[in-house]
Length: 487
Ligand code: BES
Ligand code: MN
Ligand code: ZN
Image (cartoon, rainbow, N blue to C red; front, side, top):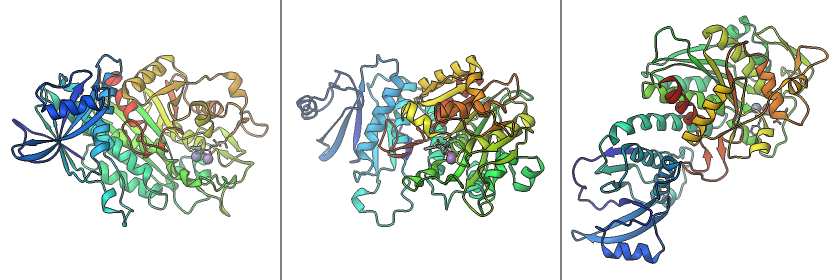
């Protein structure tokens, strides 16, 4: 979906025109057939409420949509405007119309408001139909362009940053949506190399031999059951002060999770193509930061493996040695994400001495049981960092909810044979997973772990996404960088 700015007056064509309506303030300059029609259908301009009618202008029938912006009083005004933009796109996406003009004259919106509206409109328009060769004509997405007329001063500049963010979210959605025969560790890297080329991001890739030489026995233990070779993808963005320690984002990139020898049941296993959602969010965030030339030093690291059962797969009871030197008894090969993350985090700390580490992972089913599909779980060793992430979550719409940690939980993963085991009891399963990761975080390094298992994939359409990949994670990380690192 393209967003274009028109200067001057509306193009005299027949594409639909949308007007933003603040609550109980239907514009007076509209034809009476519209205002009467809107009133008759109880349209009042509530957030994302939509009314559509046809009027005759210059001898042509013009389709006019009124879209409600709400009363503008809510704390989440920008989120409401995003929802309004998204509702407009949802209505016209497969309408047969290829372009739509949003007329912002007398909308009362500030530039940031208008940009939020456009962000919602753009994000809701993303689809991945590349594998649908027999799609009925009337279901195909037709809307390609949104034109903006009479935008308030500064909207175009405000939109530039949001457009970068949109591209990051869309890249994440693409990676998450692709099936596991298309996106596996090597092809994930290739896709990222292609998309990030020319953005100024520095890329490095570690292969299995380099990881073996570094002693990444935990990550490699997961990978050894698959014919797909593992990779560690490193993306560096240096937009901040030279020499200033970067913030590191580390993503779980299990491109398919069968569970390994601790095989998952068949029902729903196809969902495990999106077990790389953490890595996808990290890659999308790096793209967004680079495209908007963020004034911050940030490094993104993706631990990429496929978890398969095989003659060479690791067994329950195997003991592996992580890069940190700590040994792990692998009780359950399906608790593989933490095994990947621990080595990725150890390497990241050694390589970059980061100012903070934030990892993202579709780590536990238990997280979905706790928080459903409304919040990602936040675990942290640092109250200040946790607060900042919670704030960024609220501001961006990628909402987080903090979870407890502590020594009593940590004890639950002690092992009789090694330094730790990779699972605790069923109870508190998301917390013991976080405790496991914390054992690899250097003393004094602020760290947060986002368990986003319930957030990366949606069974039904949401505020600014269709059903399927949501792109969760990109917006909260981008907001965190804007507010905390770029200040
Ligand atoms: N990738 C899964 C977690 C998951 C489950 C994400 C469902 C999204 C939807 C993870 O690797 C896993 O299998 N976790 C196990 C851990 C258990 C064996 C301790 C789980 O949650 O069942
Ligand atoms: Mn698993
Ligand atoms: Zn997994």
